[in-house]
Image (cartoon, rainbow, N blue to C red; front, side, top):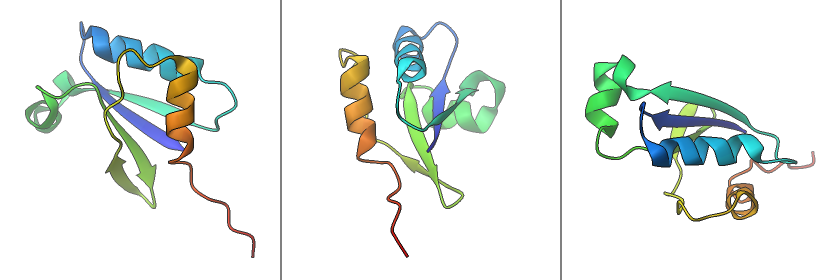
Length: 90
């Protein structure tokens, strides 16, 4: 699963979520962090919303619900588990 985290420098909630996402074990995921201050369109869209987490599915970005900053790494992994793509047998 590919995840995109929209973040900005100095955002403690962003840093906390990024740290937890990087600590998750056993979940096949790739994390891309996007600094909203590097592009005007990202800044306009997310300046009051960061951290914002998306997953990439079928080349489209789909927003994920906002996670509590108090969630542990394990709780975050469990919540993300339901967004994993299902491997359907053929």
